[in-house]
Length: 215
Image (tube, rainbow, N blue to C red):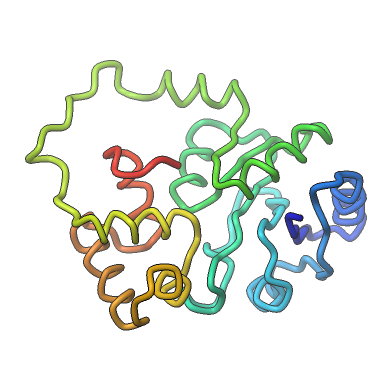
């Protein structure tokens, strides 16, 4: 079962989304107030697999991942964002920030459930028209990456990068790979340095763009 926490400023909207998700046999809604200010505490207490986040008017996302530190949970939850008419630029920025799925606020029940299930499975989900917009905004003939362009990550660093993409913190990486937390932290630092990334989300975005991982 996939555990889902609904975060919405309006209690009415939150109740509606929770009722919608409760109708799916594969999803279970975990309790929470959904208040943006208390999200990190609620995420750490409920340990959801996915957070369904209603983005407030204006399109401001809370800092991601929705935990107080990379080691607050073995694995950070995937985030599905509902936003007012998310355009290509907003969607691209949300994906770079670590959001797993982006849907317009008017998305239907089946679309929302499918996006939550996809995010829980480690996939990225965005509407078809957003894909078209993103592709049309991309350079028509990007320069092919050569060996000199792609950073040289070791096999272990590639494993760590893939786990970062899945939302694992340092402790979760250490447990999965059978190494110490200190060693896991060192691998993460090496990945960030080699990809010239300031954050874990940026490292994942760069790694995906270079074809080092699939998201």
